[in-house]
Length: 173
Image 1 (tube, helix red, strand yellow):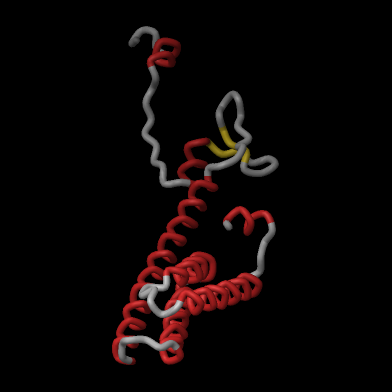
Image 2 (image 1 turned 120 degrees about the vertical axis):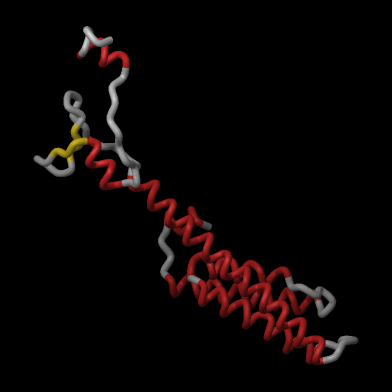
């Protein structure tokens, strides 16, 4: 799904419409499967997708809405359990799906943060072959240490390698 969204940007409204259709399809399949599938595993898909791409609120929305509709189904189906037992099951489903929505959103946020950090030092950098300064604009050059320090969490400490020690300070090597 990630590659689809990158190659052809989908608006938030369009994605929410797709999620609504997906939720309806999952409810229809759940209704066809009947009341004896105690945890409707199909509800996981709309909750995860909405949490990942639209945020926690939409994930929580689907984690409450879908079990409520399934609870309404239990009034239509002929089931051997009571309304109280059906409401307890609905509450458990809501809780499990809500936790799933929250955790999915946290993972999505962490993934986006990591992608942002990776992109910081990704790509080609114009660097002087002599002094190793980085070109930051048409006529501005910055020492590589400053550039990397500004664009990452890296901290520099300087030393001298054995080859440079031999070349620059042959008396001390």
